[in-house]
Length: 391
Ligand code: ADP
Image (cartoon, rainbow, N blue to C red; front, side):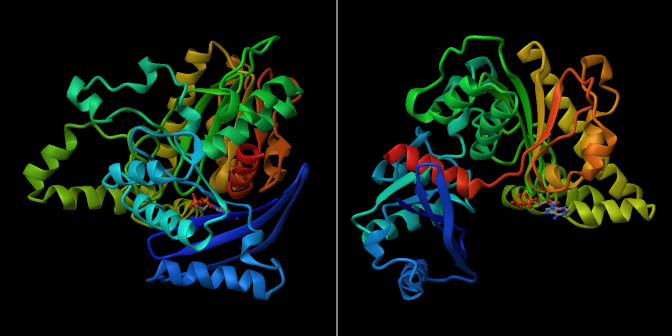
């Protein structure tokens, strides 16, 4: 089966073509375009390149196209990307302005260009469909709740993969199978001891998710990706009283406040150096106390969220680090795990230091809680979900 994964930005289009036959998975080709002004043009170009380079004999060889959609109004899961998905994306255009419009447009165009292919949308919110209401609801007036203002959560594809792979690594194939089939069968009862995991997706944007038996019980991101941990340029959690106060006292418009909280906040805003953790670390090592504070805030916030899930889960069996920061920065993993021996969390310093961008167990032999690094590959996760959906 040939599955094309379409990554649509407001001025970019990237794609990866997978061939998946049973357990055989391979990337056949990949490519992309920047500074795009006409998405239909570059989609057609990409498809004719795939044929021209001999990866397909005709564009009709593509069985399915997968879209990692972010947030839909009144819709989530892994679903056929039809008009209901386009409506759901349009309904929350305001909340995810960088992501929803290009996906709505891209899905429309693929439907015209590849009318025979199955189009599938995997929402980033899908993994949180079963979070209990006391964790997903905000204490807002009912009218706000009815308007869709609740905690949704993001990075669902990444955290779901962590749920599956960590269960495999702990020898719990029953739980791994529950995760694989989650969007088809929903949560399943698993016999045996519960598997309780805290997953740290730490990258350009970051989130921490609590997982019991393969099902998310809560996550640090909320209504929009503008919440939870400090992100590269986004603020993360902020008291709702701060925005009206800033608008009134700084003399800025609501739109300008939103722009500053999205573009000039987070690690960039605090460090005043960069939004990239490598630069911030270097600057902190050179004595920049603002850079050091940005690092400390990231660690503190990650630990705070992990601690909340530790209580909700009633204990912990594994902690997992993934994404650009989680995979590449042993010092940060060590900082997050520091001083937690009392809770059975003990990192192995050598294994941790040696693990860069690869899958490994990095906990000490006598750590009650397993600590893993599991590299993220969100395109592959999406291709697998599409394959399961249409198999
Ligand atoms: P995104 O969330 O945009 O997909 P990433 O998951 O790559 O991006 O996360 C970006 C962050 O991860 C940056 O702060 C960067 O410092 C860090 N990072 C990514 N790759 C590496 C690497 N090879 N070495 C060190 N840090 C990295």
